[in-house]
Image 1 (cartoon, rainbow, N blue to C red):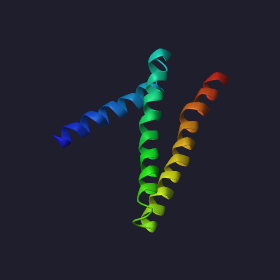
Image 2: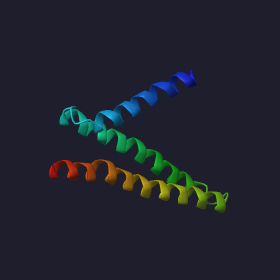
Image 3: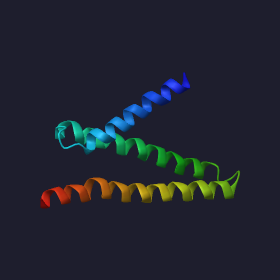
Image 4: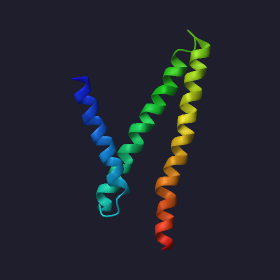
Length: 95
């Protein structure tokens, strides 16, 4: 059951990413897909950050590690989003 759930979620996420990058897909479909992708990964990063804060009293080193990992994930995801969507959009507008 877990394997089936993993395959379905993987197909949905990968399909959404590919569809959001394809210019042949209408904007009315692409923009909600981009929003769903950003919200999904944002929820995971924010959840890690909250988990790091929640366990601060029990284990400060593990908590600090989780908080640092979530901040690194946030920074790298913002960089990746800028690289994939914004710079590609600007490049397409120049041509």
